[in-house]
Image (cartoon, rainbow, N blue to C red; front, side):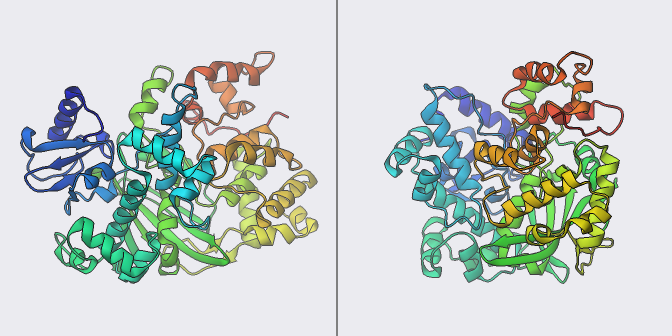
Length: 515
């Protein structure tokens, strides 16, 4: 059965399908009974007849109903419905089961590599409920079991890797979360009626993967509107020479960065290049061969960095009245939560330009050289193990006062011993409490880290001077409290409100923390 039983829902979906409206990409899928295929609303094939269409809110529902994914529009590329912003709701006892089910779906879509294998039991444990309760509320909310949902996500992930890369079938199976190659072959053949090798041979315009000497290329989709120039300008204002390269040219809008990624006991170092294809609402991501073993994790980080899974309609419906010029703005994330946190500490109580200068000195002195084919990209930001053991006098020579030295050392030690997790999968309340317990870290820093490193859409650094100016509360007796009061109407999208408020200023925001 379709997720929404009403005729109005089906009619609205068909109108969006006929218009090929990318704003609805990922919000529903169309199963065509005459072909047995399900598609995204942006599929360029001839629009099927209304009587041949069935509409589903989840890909898992379409696959459970017996439909196979389209090889042309590729449902695996659709933006996630449960990204950093899509699943939030104001908590109430009446909606508690639905909220838990959405949180479970979000975890399944964005399971953090290195935190064990994604499973129904693991998701239930993370949410603090029993497997049985999770199965009950999930099936009631979505009409499919959590195991079916999880398996569909794995299959679609595998389908993208098979289509876009030259990775071996065994590598694809492992990266997609299958316990064995035999199991992968069996499930893939059962659901898609062809084996993985046949998929590569049968897809339209097959070139056996987009792999070049410069790296591996995959596609990531997003929903419009998206103000690409504003996002890249945000990164350009903060870019450190050697570790980040931002290109704002009209014909080539891109972001490149070096990256260090830990998974278990292994550390992977490499580079990536994200190029925007605005005409197709896509990002073409090129990843170095050295990061191929952690490709799904890199893809997930880039999606969060560029906020590709955001639902602009939901956000704009609440913020448009207050910030009418910001409908295309997204929440800039972070590739490396620790590096972002270090730079947040450097930015306390000083201007953006001064913070960038300190960050550049730190990178030049302690950054690790790396060879890349991207011009200007040649250094890795220092990791937690290094900064946890660096001497205070070394940091002092870079211009860091003792308070920042202590804060940075405490932060690095906490991350290095894994008592502090700085990624979107971390528990928000625990992470904020752990950050505030560190010396030299106050509310502004913790909220800024939550907003960008944890991709939390409702963070609000009320002590930020630029934010207070944008909200016209700077001259009030207690500007931070006044800013919080003004922001109540923007929950649960206050992080997006902050980005829009900063963008409303004529100059780059001055970052300051009021202790």
